[in-house]
Length: 278
Image (tube, rainbow, N blue to C red; front, top):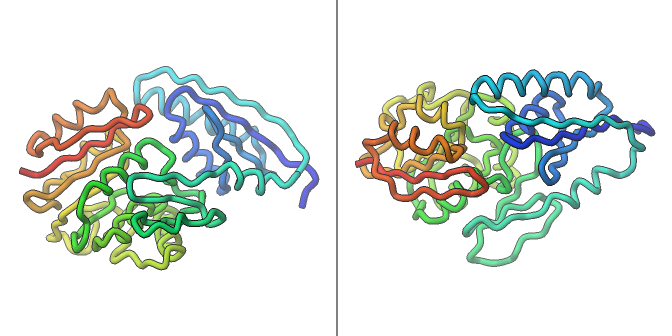
């Protein structure tokens, strides 16, 4: 083990989770989330990582038309047992009837609570983020036993695993190969096998005539509005949408005006909308 490592501390006032996802993509390593930001600890060249994040900042500002403040600090520190410290910083979270925990924490041993193991890794989704939390609360409110559900943009697989443990038949897809593998790996840690997992989108699944009882999509609003969910959901089916900032709620509702709005809840500025196909 090297005696020193490079440390890049990042703070962002908006879209923090996108910077986290980008940093993990760039480094191929887990990162530590802290209040208002995150820390990258690596032996890699952090100046190059910082440069790439600033280029990503410009992309986000152009895409969303908003000014984003990004603060960075580079240091070199002694290689203490920071992995142990990192593990201690990741706490379990209770989301409705789901208890999300890393593997180094014990379960609640409560028959009414569904225990889910998800270790922080490259794919986004641990239950702490407002959009993931909102989706888990939404899934908690639905009887999923025997239902056919598809998780679009499955990420870490947390929503797929929750639905499977709640009794659903689960299909999962993501355009990121890392997310697909992460979903499979996390399902295995939970002694589960997702019914169908593939790299791609709804439009690239092998059976185009399949319709689902429930569709959950925790992805950005600008992507959500481009997907023809109505083609893949049964009449009376439930559509759970998240990854939507408050200012884009109406844009999403206008796009899916052929659905009935059942609820719209906001967690840390992220909206989770539950719709039903008329």
